[in-house]
Image 1 (tube, rainbow, N blue to C red):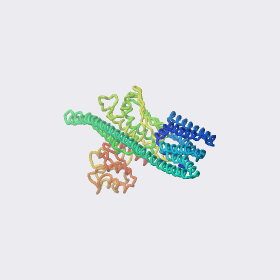
Image 2 (spheres, helix red, strand yellow):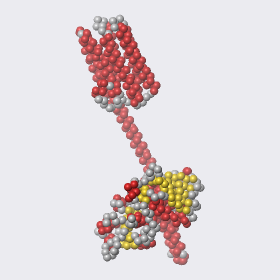
Image 3 (spheres, helix red, strand yellow):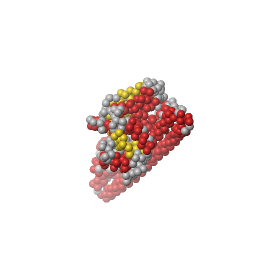
Image 4 (cartoon, one colour):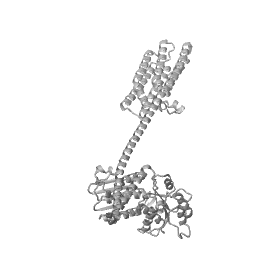
Length: 605
């Protein structure tokens, strides 16, 4: 309960008394006012009748008229309260007005003690004393929750009567004054006790309600958590079942093709079977890559690193990536994007856009696919991927973001993907706050949109705005540190085909040697370093090797840690240190994106 200032409780007792009072206490007071008014008015009438022959008879009639007017006024306020059923501050205001009228009644009882000066009439004196005492004791019952009002009520009614008895003097009236003082004191004490008891009851009730509400909230949270756990368990079951099927299919095909290659027929058709084998390996690697990325998002190990980036350049790179596939299908891949800078994790946003464009090209048989960026009036960008493909029914638009759910692919044709692309898009969009939305009409195509925040002018000035050219990697010096000879050779050949100048190392010692003269006149521009190395330089892994290399090449020397340990602590340390981490099997697009960023940073202004 809010404690009012002591002076305020004396000067404005009605308002102070209603602080911290519950709604049902207001309602309870208003419900009994009718009985209270009837009782106190009856006492007033009886007292006036007894003193009808008093010399102040005219003043008594005026007093009674005013008393009845106050009584009527109290009944009017009660009627309005019960009719309107107010709550909160409105109930408090009406209650304050009713309490003020109660104090006016008390003041009227105090006034009649002065008007009725008949010490020579024992019967009249007795009626007066009993009437005032009865009114005060009755007030104690219904005004005790509003103790400041009760206190002033008793003082207004009793003090004039006590003073009157003392002024008259004599043994009888002094005894009456003493008894009235004792009754007033105990009435106040009783009112205080009743107020405390009432507050304790309501405080306990409030605590019980709060506990019940907290328990209800905890039960709701527990129930929601249980439902989420059940949904997650069911989702994992579906995911593992679908993944089991989709993993076995390419493995099955690869095993058959490998067996066929050992036969005379395989020797005669090695080129064709080899191409099919590459397709199977690529399909298996793509599925593993999708599952790994999905698990990284779900586990929270994937961290967004927002920074300003050239939006037009990112869209141009995405378009160029899928242009050959679109051209092979006879589709037009259109880019509509003004120059501008957005704010976000460029790599993850590029992943979202790549999946959306790949999906659009895959499910569009004719027409065009458009990648469109539109600046928003309130700031930011809308990026849309539009196609003229098969479209989506409204009932399917929510399900397309589920794992392994594919429209128009009940036979699980692997040329149409594995059904994880849009699931990853949804997870990444939720993580990055991209507000992904889809609008589609069956037979006419689909439109996927995301929203990106705009960079500030200072951030825009710092962002590179020159798109990377197709030959941007030509001449880029790359140090490859990989202890697996097969993987190292394949990586070196891929980088060489892109025009990179590659220095390879099979161990930490070789990597250190590659950056020291006379082995190399010009240090490498960046590095691709495997996390697990069979031979270390008094170190544990590739991250330590990178730190050693940076002591010679500079703290900002760009490099990426390559690993197959998804969610490992050392990979997490690398990301926290600002080092790019690529997870095996690394797709060529990811490698090229990393190297393109390095090349763009080394371009002359």
